[in-house]
Image 1 (cartoon, one colour):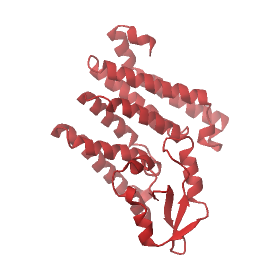
Image 2 (tube, one colour; image 1 turned 30 degrees about the horizontal axis):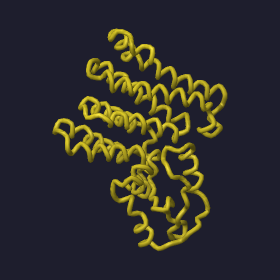
Image 3 (spheres, rainbow, N blue to C red; image 1 turned 30 degrees about the vertical axis):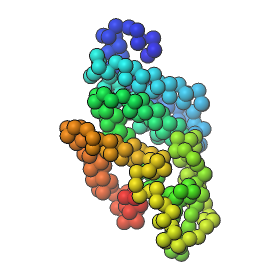
Image 4 (tube, one colour; image 1 turned 45 degrees about the horizontal axis):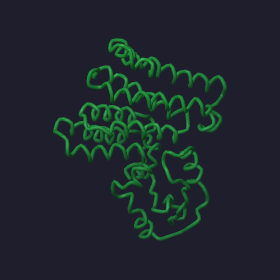
Length: 267
């Protein structure tokens, strides 16, 4: 893609329009490799070499730089490229270390946020819409309470409240999801009462940096929802409709029909 940047607009536009073929081939090749080598039996962070993940991250980094640069003169083609990158990130969440993919997404969205162009805001919403279509959207966003000390708040079987230490400082760190699920089922180390439990989770009740970090994808969506209030009416509709449709979708999801699970997801 770097070599193509100096080519004619027609050639670059053709690349952008057909970029979905490349990203689709990457994802299908990863899936085929997993099946043939039985990589599904090992941890996601150990399935593919670091060099492969670095190259995939580089594709997204270079791609978003070119989209920001070329979106004015190649609006439709740039949008096609953005959609292809969004699908690449979405499906990569199924195969590789999700902490690494979250870092890709964070860097990509940050580049789109660096400018004030309306078209790039639309691209960002397109990107978020595709991410929110992930079949495991709720678990990806960690529907649990996490206090200021990075401790997961949960009830034990006897009805008491327990804290489990979540040893992470960044949602984009390597192996974040695997560490999270290992620690949430560990033996609880601290008991507290109900009042202290919720008081210690004050960062979970508003759009704080810790909320956006711990519940990454929905944190991005909520940040965009807040930012869109200052935008024109026709743009405000998109983030609002995205949130509404997301809530409606999960309210009818049979996997979350149980009231306890539904309440956790609503948090």
